[in-house]
Image 1 (cartoon, rainbow, N blue to C red):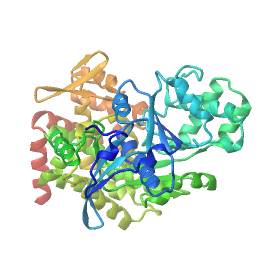
Image 2 (cartoon, rainbow, N blue to C red; image 1 turned 180 degrees about the vertical axis):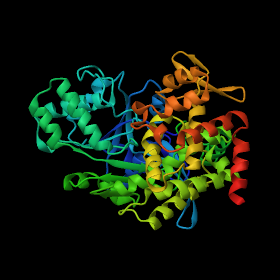
Image 3 (spheres, helix red, strand yellow; image 1 turned 45 degrees about the horizontal axis):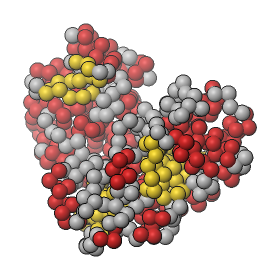
Image 4 (cartoon, rainbow, N blue to C red; image 1 turned 135 degrees about the horizontal axis):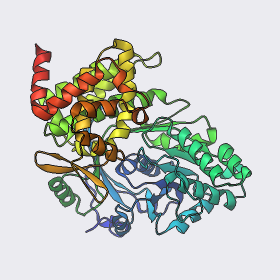
Length: 507
């Protein structure tokens, strides 16, 4: 039996399983969501679903699928229902809950159903837009707002807003609340600026551009939840047998959850009523504190660790944390090198240390199979956004090399060593096996490694101000340290380095 609207009534109630009432499947559409990704399904869609079950929000989501890949067919077959398995611990107790999420009404393909998407602009109930198009999604492209569809996410958003403006004759009340969840600083502010610039490039009416500025609330936001994706195959099969149905869209997440949304608008706060359903949704006039803690301690440590963990032979975060030496390295990196750089007048040391320890506990979660290879997606962009500010701050504080950050950066450079290119994709090689480098800057590193000299490679990469916004080679001994670590990774290997580092720390 497949999970579907027709079969909901045949699913047996059991402890730990949340089954939606059929009335929730006919709630009006109130949200337009750009993206079908794991994070959106495991966090915003979860919060809205929970609010619907508590009779608070009472609205569902129209999802826009923009990429050429995805699971639209599975959504259609299952009437957009999917299972979320929460696994982990919280409030000093283990937590295991399985929820059938019913907050999505339909999934539309931007490529094939663009007119249907634009028709949603005339729906007065739809007043909220959510997005997660990865860090590279919020960019200014040479886009045509009249294309079907425009190429970029900002282009698609602009086209939708234009249709909205026309449908409601530019009324202030018809403005949207727009909450991007892409992991970039001030995502709402940057998205608004790009949309306005794109409108000007397309020579759209000044009155419409003014409506974008004044009637729409672009909210900065921050999301924090580890959503690794599908359960391991054996566990998926066992879970489906226990539940009594099959679900191609079933995903798992950790227990911890946070969605911080920045707005001063009372109208926006009212439209974001789902926040009342869960303490994990925080609406505040300033979310800088939440962003810094999460971006640096969780995302930053992930990015600085993933390459090294990959070369040490660990497939998942869980495996790495189960290794005593690797877990010590991660703890040392987070508490001794990253945490001091996060402390400010607004964020005290006790709060930073408490959050860091929470992150470490989350990494230990034995239920989550979070793959290091997944964390390497858009590796360069993540390194620049999450960790270059940390490196600069560390030098301001200590004027010396941060050893674990240096090691992480060296592992990143090695991971980005492409040995072949096929169909526009770049592949590295480790232990005789190739791996895909999913990074828009892979072509640059492919050229750098043609220098065939690690000293030159490191210098060219670190001194590339266009890449980092600063010259990292100018930092005292940082280039020499990264070079030494890179050569060690290529000769003795990650495990030998790990054994030596942890032994040194003990001595």
